[in-house]
Amino acid sequence: MSKKLTFISECPWPRKGDKLITTDGGLSNACLNYTHDPWILYAEGYRKAADCLAQQVINREGYPDFLVYPIVFSYRQYIELELKWFIKRGSALLRKEEPKLKEPHNLLLLWTAFRNIIEELFPEEGTDDLEAVEEIIEQLAALDKKSTAFRYPVEFDGSPTLPDIRHINVANLHEVMSKIGGFFDGAGGAICELSQSY
Image 1 (spheres, rainbow, N blue to C red):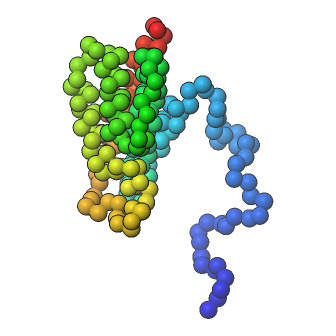
Image 2: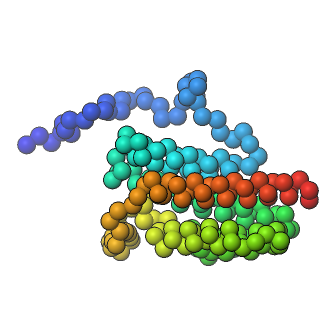
Image 3: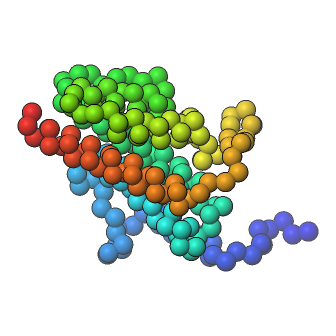
């Protein structure tokens, strides 16, 4: 039996001298560190990545059984980053210290801090929209409490991360996340407008 890595791969293997990061890609170059507020770039990056992958599944151009993990993780990461950005910006507007969270990936704790800030900044706003978004956040938090369920198949103790779920409708997930994105876009615009008047 051969002791060499001789299995067949469709892709070429790395060669000595290959560079992971280069800057000579022309239109394929991504620009970094050009804004004073990179939080939005990070958050939107995860949202757009999830949207692209979800669209592949919806158009039957991708493999849903593989892509569902990065799709859900990316949407969850998008929400986490959005909430953290709102907490940072909202706390600054209110001239308050940012709340210290014991569990920095806990969506419910982040949502509570976000909602408290939004209700203080916009006291005349109704609660229906916040409650609708909160329902979605609660569902996602129940599915993935620690931001690990769609990154790893097992917990630290070896138990499965998603033991009770068999199917996820990617088209529905994409539709609901588009609505969440619309909410965050609107709230972000309101925060930026308020920032200019302070």
